[in-house]
Amino acid sequence: MDASPDLPPQSRVPVFNMPGIVTASIAVLVGIHAIRQVLPDLWDIQALIDLAFIPARWTVAFDPAKAQAVVQAAGAGLSDPAMVAVREEFARALVSESSAMPWTFASYGLLHGSWMHVIFNVVWLAAFGSPVVRRYGAWRYGVLALVGVVAGAVFHLLVDPLSAMPLVGASAGISALMAAAARFVFRPPPAYRPAMAWQVAPPPPLETIPELLRNRNAVLFLCIWLGTNLLFGLLSLPLGAGDGPIAWDAHLGGFLAGFFLLPLLEPRRT
Image (cartoon, rainbow, N blue to C red; front, side):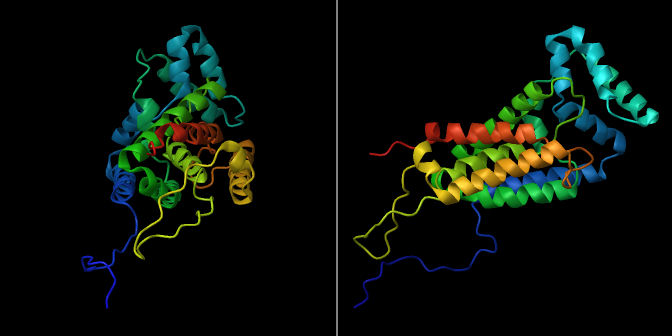
């Protein structure tokens, strides 16, 4: 006697075992960077200025007296006079703008510095965005990623307010998803005996912070993540993300946002 449920037959096996929203997110990031590669240089530079997050723009918007400090900081630490002149001229153009461009707190996450930057980010997005979507659904995934991007820009502004270097990349949003996933993926599954063989165990509740700190795998992941970001940030290494160093502070801001926001998005259990 066949006791298996009457399930619809599987017609085909998907090539990528990812939720549709994660696949769509990756397609958007890759597509935008591909479009930028064929744009005229002037258009691409203008898109970067209009969409990237630049701390100095906001600093001067709040305190116009900081304009000269921004220009001086733009050329600080450089030995090439020509590069100093270029950066200072760019900073002067930025501080002369009247608009702070508030959308850049989020739009910078759609841009990337190189193909290596895009590939690096989409690999981590696939790895950590997928479990978040499977547990929480598409809209909570979107909220976490967006809040992480915004939090990364805010943290970057607080740490380096005079910087005229454009901040780009989805890394802060992905860091938020990493932190969110760390709250539940390392927890061992509870003992569960289904009434029927095909029933799936409900997802376990989130670990509290004390429980998480007793989970060796979770603590090891958190230590490696934090240590790697701080190391590359302090050494100012680009890691294939373009000509600029890793914005470790933006990553940290996104990570903290995802770590502490996730419990607020946890569905109520009956």
